[in-house]
Amino acid sequence: MGQEYKQCIRCVMDTTDPDIYFDENGFCNHCSEFLEKTAKRVYIGEETNKKLDQLIKKIKQKGKSKKYDCVIGISGGIDSCYTAYIAKQLGLRSLLVHMDNGWNSEAAVKNIKNIANKLEFDYESYVLDWHEFKDLQLSFLKASIPEMETPTDIAIPASLHKIAAKYNVKYVISGGNFATEGILPKIWHYDAKDVKYINSIHKQFGKMKLKNFPTFGFIQEIYYKIVKGIKIIYILNYVPFSKEDAMKLLEEELEWKYYGGKHYESKFTGFVQSYILPVKFDIDYRKATFSTQICAGEMTREYAIEELKKTPYANVDIEKEKEFLIKKLGITKEIFEDIMHTPPKWYRDYPNNKKFLGFIYRTYLKFYKKKGDNS
Image 1 (tube, rainbow, N blue to C red):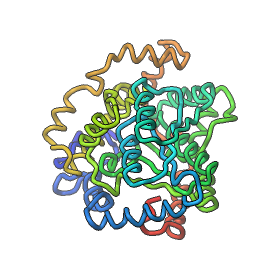
Image 2: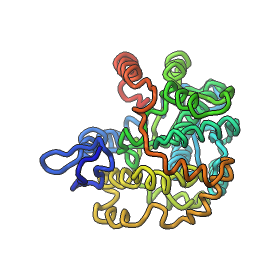
Image 3: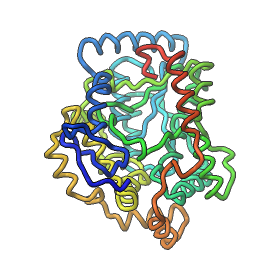
Image 4: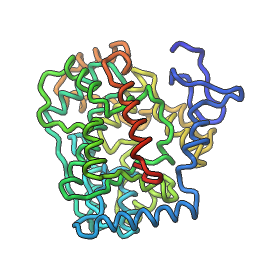
């Protein structure tokens, strides 16, 4: 940290990621890695079509005697709604599952209902214990780290796998994809599956025991994958995917409505990414998103640079959103401002299982991951 400011000459990532580095051409590690590795895992034509055909046959075969072929996580956002649309086109009998953490925007709720109705999919909501979840979210805010979304990010796969196991479904389909999410600095968002990290923060800053909150650490993940045989599939990596085209299709065919910005389907996520992260941590998630889109040919670097001149909350009534968050979390404005002015910390400042988890996942990849599973 503290290095002289520098921006990649190919994408728009810069030294606001303290771990970034550049080659002799001025290209950063993020876009270089994306183009060398990640780009090969997105849609590339006939070869990908064949892989998708084989995958769908396998999913349907596994679901033959069951009510559903797969479970699809849905948030009301572009990616997850378009994933549900693709699943319908592919003839999958899908159960849509929404993990409700209490922060849904009205637009997101309407989108989920419209998608389920229009596509004629069953829908199920997994509702978190609000008091426990609020206490955990406040713990992460008080810890002064950028991973304020970790409680949500671990509850999503936990809830999806629980419901998949409930119906004996072997595939969970996620809207995650490399085309729009291939670049994200690790220090901006540490591993949400590190239960030791979560527990250490909650122990220090929380006030109540987490009796009902669903976790998804390596033990649960290995149980669901190895014992229950459940795989996660990122189906948008198998089809041509353009955010702009997907949005247009959803609006025209499924009465889907845009909610104002990336991840604004959640009131909390929208406020965190548009205000707390850039103001407190000098982290602008748009840089990672735009850089991915530049590398994928979805956006020009010139356009991204112009967009970044606007504040992340340019189109948001930030004071109104701040008041909403403060009231919902049950804190005072003074407490919120104290949180905003507490010096930033990083995952390295709290007990975590990074080394151990690295070993576990390397071992898993070596011995259990089959080529093409994408799980």
